[in-house]
Amino acid sequence: MAQRKEIIRPKRLVEKYGENFPIWSYSRISSYKNCQHEYYLSRILKVKSENNYWGILGGLAHDSLEDYYNRKIEFGDMLNKFENSFLDYEILDLKFVKDDKQNNKMIKKYKDCMIHFFKNHKAIKQKVLSEREVWVEIDKNVFVGYIDAIHCDEEGNYV
Image (cartoon, rainbow, N blue to C red; front, side, top):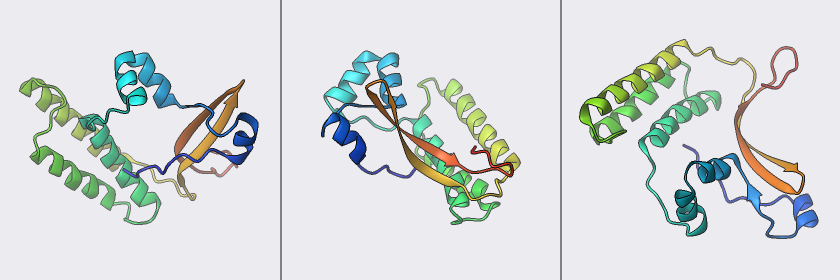
């Protein structure tokens, strides 16, 4: 998965709020909502955590799509790229959950769903922009987010 660069605060917002204004994001807020202790460890103490299996495999699917839309691979190669990358992680015997029977069911279902997705994906014909940084102000709160993919359809609507 593409690594995001260091966040550089837009000049207009620095002029308005100063150099070190707090930046909010969906992941920051959902992290806090899901587990305040995890938020404290990761966001306050900056304790590094290992990537979980969901994040790793989601990244593989994301990378396949991004490579296709950035014209690095052909449409038919997306599934092959995903399956080859997935195999690397299956060999490592990573776990979704500790129970082996449940884990095997989850891996099979996830892989089957992704294979179905790549086999049935309808290619977007317009130019697709990926990983676009977006800044939004709500009251005096500043949020940053990243749009995975955006394109303009035939009617001029941004999707």
